[in-house]
Length: 344
Ligand SMILES: CC(C)(COP(=O)(O)OP(=O)(O)OC[C@H]1O[C@@H](n2cnc3c(N)ncnc32)[C@H](O)[C@@H]1OP(=O)(O)O)[C@@H](O)C(=O)NCCC(=O)NCCS
Image (cartoon, rainbow, N blue to C red; front, side):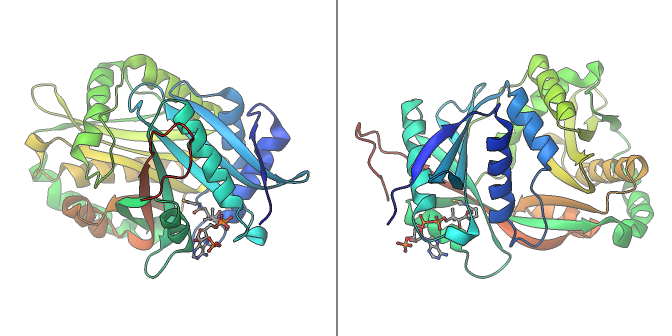
């Protein structure tokens, strides 16, 4: 097996980042929908840097040709024990050890950073085996959280919205919904941060060893600046209880560089406030904002755990359809100094 030359790339070097992005696209080309960020978004993020995580990009070379790449993100505000990682290999050269070489270097760097856990998202068909998962398992990664990835065809399902709104109106009348685009309003900034912090404790996390995130106004504003640089518009709706507490949130993002799709991120209603149809009210209000502001968006994508009955019921009602699975796999690295593979 060839000995691949794996080295760190300069995230300010456009040709290197472009090749990394092309490999990302190529390695994801067999998925049912293209959900990779547009090049402009990726480049803006690499070249502009991130304040919430330390990002390293690796390339695997065959001579001067980059045939594989990998990324590691070390969170800086919280979760200081882990790294999120990705590995991509040119489909023309799979099963020749490129992925293994990149992953070994990722793990070496995670250890060097004093961290002991690696988390990777693996995409797999809705049913049946997945070579990506086989690769992960072969390197000692175990599935920690499986989410069903779903797509919502807006034109085909929006005729349901008025009926749903009528049915739920009486249930959430005690709550005020605050909607915005791009910038979290000052009046709900504190509550928004508390909800972001509650997310990892309240959403099903399976076996993932993640801890609560830490959010403050500066982190929110830095994130907004990064999204804006990448051409992303976030739309959000937050629920406020009668006593002024922020108790629910939903967010989705749309890119001006890939205008046909929007990506849903977290939706959360705090435990004491469930059962008032707030989950559906929040999502529906956000979909209406999206449709009005960005009529070119035809599909919204989301992922949620199979055992998250409440969220699944909301998504079914709206008409989301399963398209694939996202399996978050995790590996606890052995702390031995030589950095050898630590499978099992
Ligand atoms: C998964 C991926 C990184 C594998 O890259 P690769 O260079 O082909 O992997 P390697 O050659 O190093 O494979 C190492 C081992 O993984 C396992 N493996 C890799 N591909 C496999 C497949 N298609 N079926 C079954 N096992 C597989 C095997 O045990 C293999 O060893 P072997 O070839 O000696 O049997 C590549 O296919 C890819 O980019 N996929 C899309 C993105 C992704 O899912 N990344 C990884 C997430 S952990």
